[in-house]
Image 1 (tube, helix red, strand yellow):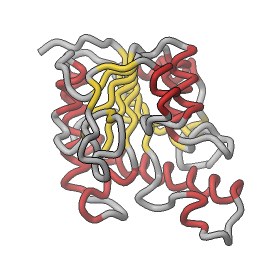
Image 2: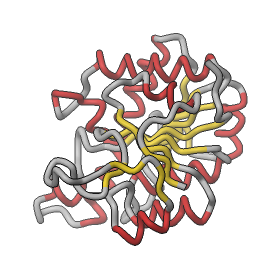
Image 3: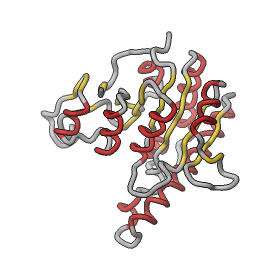
Amino acid sequence: MKAVYKRVLIKISGEALAAEKHTGFDFDFVSRVCEAVKACTEMGAQVGIVIGGGNFWRGVKDGAGKVERVSADRMGMLATAMNCLAVADVFRQAGCDARVMTAVDIQGVGERYDTRKAVEYLEAGRIVLFACGTGSPFFSTDTAAVLRAAEIGADAILLAKNIDGVYSDDPRKNPEAFKFDEISYNEVLARRLAVMDSTATSLAMDNGIPVVVFALADPENIGRVLCGEKLGTLVK
């Protein structure tokens, strides 16, 4: 198998790391994800990763009206840092060199994000985990993923989700919903489809970065998408 993308940004939801446990970590599943990413690097791909924080904290939703938006978003940033630390250690146990870079200063947790340093790490074959979102409230980790992808010059964003692509409607609620094999950014925005939030979608569109949306239920899908197999939905 040969990678069709030289450098990718993989976005993984925090909930995916919990698998059936829904909170915390399912380390058997995390290990499978890390092994799949390791296989990508062995094919010569350079890999950056953004992980959500939903397995610990879902911002305003979990704030239940008691935690204001800015604080809730900063708590979410800390959740992503915890996820990156855990996943980085699993990578290291698998024999990979993984580095955590944070969008805010957290001494002892990770290096402060620097684009040039991140690219140096990627070119040296290291996996870079980008923690703490954009470093600012009101921006999702989807937006952070697109931002980092643009900064590091990624060829594509691999959006690993709990659903196997982009649908015309929520397939869990509408049995007539159909999956797109390919769709434009403009159509995603016009239909208000729940691929990424609108800020992330617009940023990907403005920077011409294709997004492949696919199911993480089988972590081997990461390598299949990297090698150009038509899985999920291509947004471009």
